[in-house]
Image 1 (cartoon, rainbow, N blue to C red):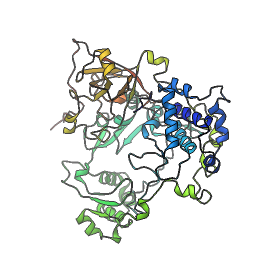
Image 2: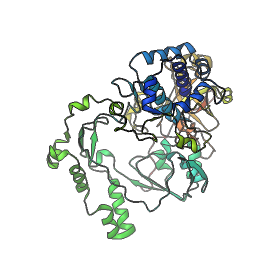
Image 3: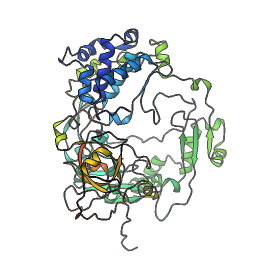
Image 4: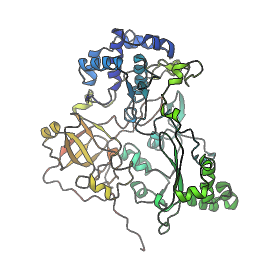
Length: 539
């Protein structure tokens, strides 16, 4: 484990690349045959274009990792068969596109792309792209149809669009005008759980004419809705899905366990009834395509390769159909065909090769996205002036015991919550300095918000870094105050809605600085209500 400063991975890799180049250890033949634009990236790497050579010492000052250790890593990677595995967390930060691009260039300089055990990959923890597969057709998704409204915005720009209608932003090299939003119809997502900067989002939601949600549970999003359609949970409806996020070799029958309770309905049935009420029989028939719910499930199954092994009735009885994984899939090597024949197996890039420099990106002339991998200083990081006020970098990984915000209202919370609140991991040296004891409630705060969390004191986190897993159900202590403190530890109370860049406008929640303090003895902690059921009028 090398405890690097968060958000400085690009600097680390640039330092390694500079060392490989100046020590003449990089794979010149691979660069020449399989990549495009190395000659245009090199002046930046060597400091000829900006007077800042990306040396080991330069990288060490930024990352907090010694120059000797960075050199050791580079020498190790180029001397052994090395696979570089990127992750989603690096991308979910300001300038988050750069680590992925830098990782690809570093792997190219090592020269093992297309060799077994070498090269690079992303999302290896879940559904890794360009993986080996069974080769079988799995069940397709239901078409969403054609939306009469053509406006679309990046998912991270919800609050900004609501609060700034008609604002023009950069997006993928073009100008995008944000639409005027008067209503939100939310289905299949916990908006108040996954959007950054909760307090900003709440200010935005309060300006809308109407918020409609489908929910089986009394989630924070449901509490902010004007209209709630009680939808069924997965246990209360029949469905179909596939398994094996890598090999996609199983189709599963998701047979309901219990009948739906009270007035809850499947999402499909809710939309069917809405279509009937809005447009009559003709609109309903257009939505359903004259198929019943089970006919849709059967039709999706029949579009897969499942019927070659089992009829639908047998599949539904057995609960699954499994395809055999061919031997060639077990010997799959990512990018092997490209390495063997780059002419007939071109990549989907400008040149058909690994794109180290992109003229297309350079021509956009964006301040925060250049034509090659670049180190940009984040707005919030441990090397910034802001760290004097907020000296901890907060990361918000996916939860160990939940699926995002799912299960936060169940008994699972008893396995890991601290006094009913989301744990905050803190290094034991930092905790000792601040007088924080394991298991006590603390406040984590910045200019965007405040939350209460349970202190989890450990040596397994870098000094100066805190970690709160995303997905806790937001629970404001006093809804009548501006930016109320969250009593449950919902981390997005603290995260920023700042986009990764003007290129992709993605989320950057892992670029967040905070401070932490013990609660004073006289401070009373109110009971949390994030999972409490509502009062039902007339019940």
